[in-house]
Length: 273
Image (cartoon, rainbow, N blue to C red; front, side, top):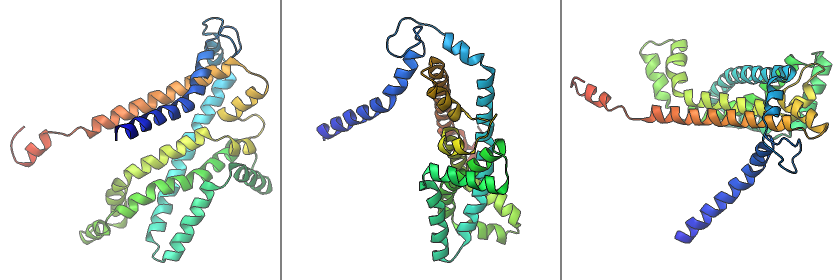
């Protein structure tokens, strides 16, 4: 048993080393005054200052955040409606067909999805830019959010909604006061998964961005094609550290919420606090 645990730990360390070594290599050379990624000549923060003072890059960062937040919110709302509709379907074949169609969009290659959106927007007459990027991000985020929300709906006991109706609750009250609070973890999971996919997407966005509008992934790709610039390293380092801060903050918030409230059982017993 000890040998197996030791092998598992070594394997886990190797996996994380392979995943994080390129990121730390990129971060290390973002402070290189030599301007290359071959030999570290000295420490400098010039590339970070260059990123901060690059007005165009800051506008692109804002565009990326706006697209990600807006598309994730819209996709989550659509996914809630879709998950409720799928859950209420009684015909097993129809339900499985809808779930299969939903899953196909997730496993389809991004290049095919991006090219399809490009053809669609060209035929319909939608100008490539903010609208086309937003619509495409909403489209590929909805199936992800549905998969996050649907299991919580399936785990919910139908007797809860029946009891609410028997007590005189309207359909709106059942939705807002019974169903949505129960599936809230799935809603947040779907939103943040959609947010992650939107921030991370390159292939689909590359097809549907027009002249004068860009997102961070497309901009980094365009700059990388022109040659190695350590400003890209600095920008990537800032994004990575910001992501780490969000993850750590989310972890501590969850720990704080998970702490048992000792005073509550006392109150339930009628003992004053």
